[in-house]
Image (cartoon, rainbow, N blue to C red; front, top):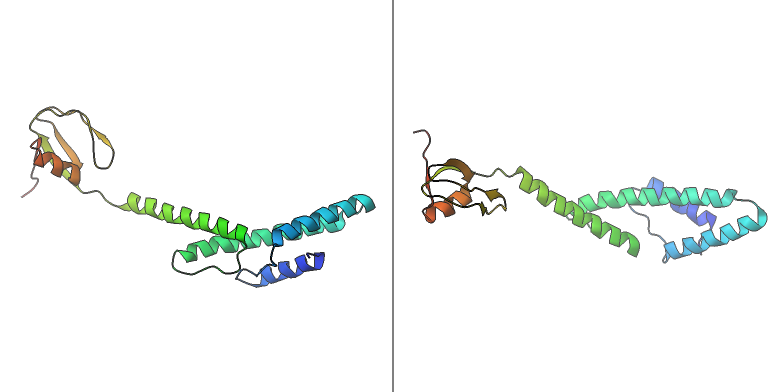
Length: 168
């Protein structure tokens, strides 16, 4: 059962530890029940001080844990496994890890330099979608353009373009 003292103890532990503190089983359900009891008592007695204080403590506990989970998600990508996650936090953690991994893939693609080729069209070509999913063309015979190397290679093989040598 959750009490005000339990919340203060968890708050103190979360503040003083860089790791997630192990929470009691069914913590979120028990906290919800505790707050409902406190709210009912507060209405009866007209004293909301402990309820407000408990809410502030809980908010701080949640914020501390969320920050730690976000840090764990970054370290997890490097192989560290999280400990002491509640089932709800584990779901949040897994979604964050998935987002970070996806963003890293996007960032990597953005940083990759695409090799280019200068080619001359030896026949007319309609608009086409390149391997990078970008639209190119339409082109007329004699047009000289710079294309991604992989697209140029395919067009050279199909005898639509010729590679233009630059320099020596």
